[in-house]
Image (cartoon, rainbow, N blue to C red; front, side):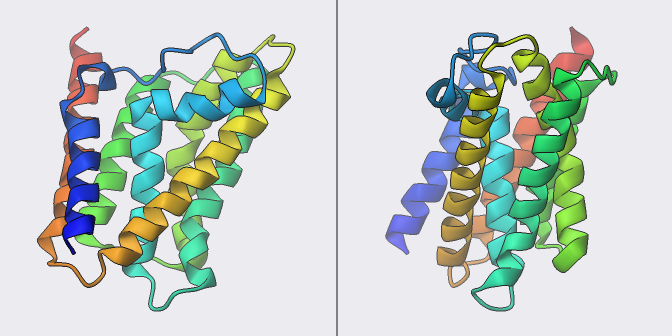
Length: 202
């Protein structure tokens, strides 16, 4: 329990208190050069990292048992992330991608906060809807990059790793006091709200 509290506190501090968290692109934006750079990118773009952790956290919290049903949300997110990245690399221009990313953070945080019991294909579709804007943003950054596919492979690997961390954290919190995961969800939602306000006021 004490370890879980420390982990969730670290997540909240990282996502909500870091001044650098208010920009979706990481410090390596537009500098992807292969698998490792792509792998590191979600860890330096805190909005990407937060939503991936939140999807894993939510999926574990709502699962009836440990097993395949926990994977619908994460796999839906990862697959649509790939589709969105491919579309972005092909030049599909969808307006308001940045606000969409902020809204996805708000929504993912609310899923954790409320433990919305959506499972199976429904969970995959909802998580995938959140992933589209993140994938597009990655695709725009990777366009005309000679090592785009290696970088994208690294991003997807990191995405699955972050989902797995979220799943493990969520499963460990199932027996914790209900306010602990709610606090995490509220922090992610608040982060998304701050990001959206910043974007709309600039």
